[in-house]
Length: 479
Image (cartoon, rainbow, N blue to C red; front, side, top):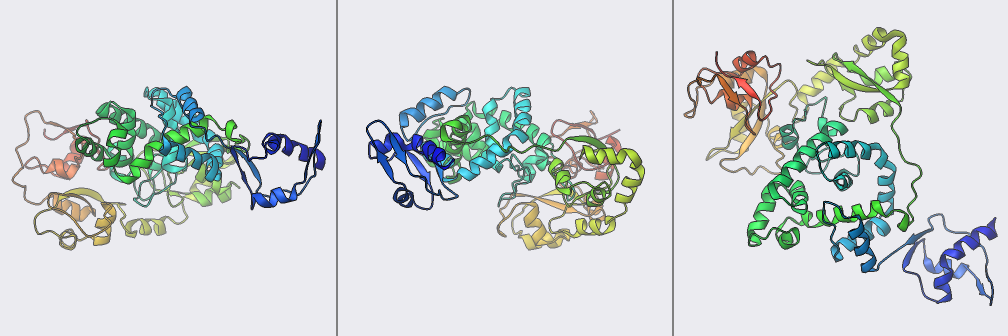
């Protein structure tokens, strides 16, 4: 067996050894010199013999193809709707994914079957390029619970404001930015919007990373040139790497075999079914009672925070392993009732007092005035400066006049704010008696537009159980 294994190794290296030069590839080991010293190669006229030696555990043959013409040709062959240009920067990232950090690429191979079918389904539904499925690799490493230093969250790395704009619910218990299906729908809507804005996929990708405002500014600085590589010097530093990384990972995932990546050991979800839940549920208790692995429940429901569901106004679709569902079938009421009695008060207390918590609170939008500082705004609204910074993703205490700050108030404070004298922009209730919600609107800002309209009245007129509204939604504002 040792001789056979040695011969297999030789077949990989024989050509270059005969030429007495290293192949255009990389050998990952503790030391290439050590391997060469331990291997005794005997060349004969018609045959070659190789003595077996013990390979280091981390030895790996990595085919490397540094020929720019080959890489450029491969990119052109897989290019579809999104340009896959070749240049030195892209080649550098290809080298990173195929040689320098192969462990990361292996991890993506293991995870891709978890999420690629879902991505492909919604990209097709929204008539978007299929290759956008690779974008989540760059964004989150296909980790639905990924959180960046800037507090972007999920497979598609939504900031809270952008996530809410595209209809994702975010609170202490549930963060739909971590829901694979809902966040993928939101990402499709956002990508479609960005492409409609720029008419160019490279610019749309750049805008997804840094925001459309930064891309528009870069276009102006570049003399209104509208190619990513023309505006390259003017986009944020991270964005300069973002588009090349996308091209590189698209290349890598389409040429795995050429770089000696194996497709085995791919992850899979446990077989599951769904349960509609409306009452508080403590998931670790449910897992213990039904003899279920808690990790499986988390894997199936990544958007549930703190391992519990609160009391809800509408049913939540909970994904559970078949083993759990089979146990529930025998005595569903007992299991659910038992799991609803554990930790409820403690978790509600944590939810209300956690830094930056919005649990049980309603949002107002405050426009910064001349002379304002975070401390004075916090005192005026009876909130903490730390909460203000967390709600608005502020890394310092610096604010500017005209800046809009999200402030979350307890119900009694919210009602008091709603009852405050109307501003100079307040107007009489319109004859149409309806108002179409615009981006950035909240119930608070809408109530301030019309005399005599309060938050509570808006909720009653529209039968709202919370403060969530969507752009385009029509609200009754008068009778």
